[in-house]
Image 1 (cartoon, rainbow, N blue to C red):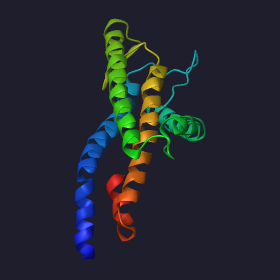
Image 2 (cartoon, one colour):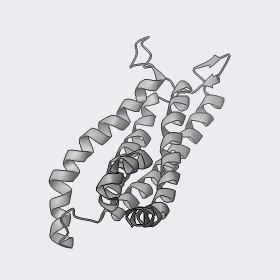
Image 3 (tube, rainbow, N blue to C red):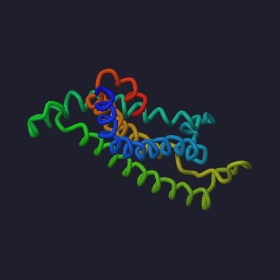
Image 4 (cartoon, helix red, strand yellow):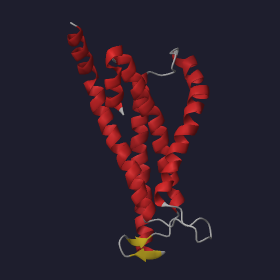
Length: 182
């Protein structure tokens, strides 16, 4: 009987798992693509000869996530709670939806920045790397908005996903749900 209930539980969350899988594809794409983008930007720190390593730009994702979580928890949730009457302000699935919408916006911002970077690389290159081609004169700091949006998106979707699966699975299956959602 317990196995039947476990199978029912898994079947109920499959649609959410599928939509979350699409989200994680976007998330990974955004994070890895940002590093490749950074390699083609002017990564000089001000007027110095110091270059910011391309992979270091992903710290803005983590900063946005770290800054946003307490703001959301201490400021936004109490305001939403007054309007909705729900303990968490909005439902877990609504939080996941907000995160997925932010992921779409992130990809749009990324496309605009990449179009601008490519145009400047072709018209006003700073230099040419034999392996990667023309280096754009656009500052690498233009990656900050899209990486910050990824952090906000993660704050909504990933955290809400863990919460959703934790609530949906029985106690003896929670280790499976943690592996399935992350």
